Amino acid sequence: MMDAVGDESSTSGSGSEKPRRTRRTRMTGAERRQQLLDIGRTLFAAKGFEGTSVEEIAAKAGVSKPVVYEHFGGKEGLYAVVVDREMQRLLDMVTSSLTAGHPRELCEQAAFALLDYIEEYTDGFRILVRDSPVAQSTGTFASLISDIATQVEDILGMEFKARGFDPKLAPLYAQALVGSVALTGQWWLTTRKPKKADVAAHLVNLAWHGLGNLEAKPRLIGHRKS
Image (cartoon, rainbow, N blue to C red; front, side, top):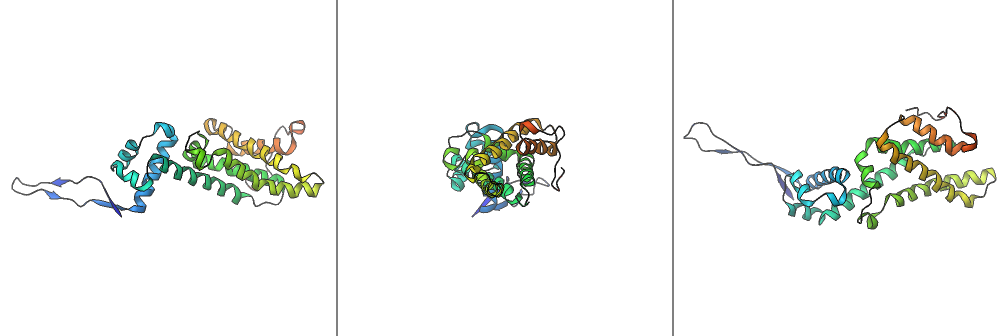
């Protein structure tokens, strides 16, 4: 399927010449779909699901409303695809970052992964943390955090067993650890202070040492310093 882009234009020379029509650039169906996803992502991040209309999405894309319905069935369908893609992107970034063997460095990697996502895909993160009726059926930020915690749970379980702790408590600690990073990320989304590396260091400081043994000037032990 090919969609037309842009308006037809005409040029005229002398009064006796006929107008000359320019060729219209056309998008493939895949290109149009990606364009609508990009526009929808930007609008949903800025205005939320309720504040965004199919009319506005279509106008930004330079197409009619039926084109949006043809590709996604409506605003709900477009939103669902945007949310699913952002959830998968964040999950992939976090899980692929967990490469170190030392538990403390794993904490650093998880914190950096989430902060990297917030910094690089700010619109996506804004969408994920918003509440929407559609998100209840397609997945929520809470369910995503639960998925990430499951990855961390396996790592903590092995570490607990090696240290003589009860591995059955690993899920509890995984939820607490990932949840604290996620909520701090929401706060950092708007403040952006202190710098990313400092935020990661302080998160790991609390997770690793606890309130009773906090370091006054926490340091990162992994290879990443920014």
